Length: 194
Ligand SMILES: Nc1nc2c(ncn2[C@@H]2O[C@H](COP(=O)(O)OP(=O)(O)O[C@H]3O[C@H](CO)[C@@H](O)[C@H](O)[C@@H]3O)[C@@H](O)[C@H]2O)c(=O)[nH]1
Ligand SMILES: [Mg+2]
Image 1 (tube, rainbow, N blue to C red):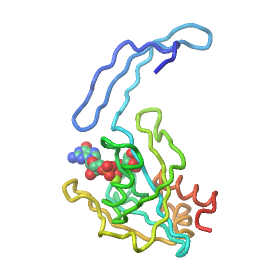
Image 2 (tube, rainbow, N blue to C red; image 1 turned 180 degrees about the horizontal axis):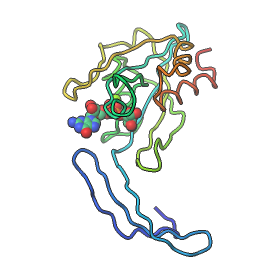
Image 3 (spheres, protein in one colour; image 1 turned 30 degrees about the vertical axis):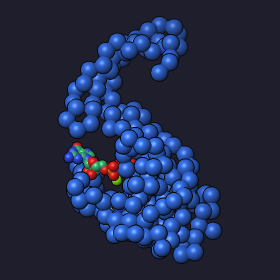
């Protein structure tokens, strides 16, 4: 945080019920050199990691389906959404996080993953940066059912979908999660399945 054109004046916690919502008041120096005071709400729910599992021989990818309340209250009729496996970083680096989440959510145990890029997903309001990974998977890496942690009430369906079908599902709107679209398009552009 070094920018001489920004001076934070106050940072107030509006909610710390689950994650943290703050109101930050700051002075912002405009291009003409004058200063103005601005206020922004900032939601901090930590950072995350996500991964596209792909199989070159079968030309398939592993995605998951789960209920997401924020989509349910904003136009997603049943609230179910198809996503790439993902999780929030705990006390670990992004690579360890995504290996743990992959096993919990999909049942595949990975040894090798490859980081491809990182992105702020909603920079106007949410602090979160997501680290994006890809990895090849095969049947012999399947060590459990997956489905997520029952202690966290994660009722996750594991889906194995032909890659080209997944690409079509972006067009039809059946896939409408940003991180998932980004990973599928990455795979397409870089010919990962060929
Ligand atoms: N009780 C309660 N539980 C919550 C709340 N918010 C989240 N949780 C629970 O916290 C757990 C987090 O699970 P993870 O697998 O670690 O994270 P995620 O929700 O899948 O998040 C991933 O996907 C998000 C959506 O794309 C990403 O934003 C995030 O970075 C990450 O990649 C889930 O069981 C979720 O239901 C809440 O307000 N209350
Ligand atoms: Mg998750």
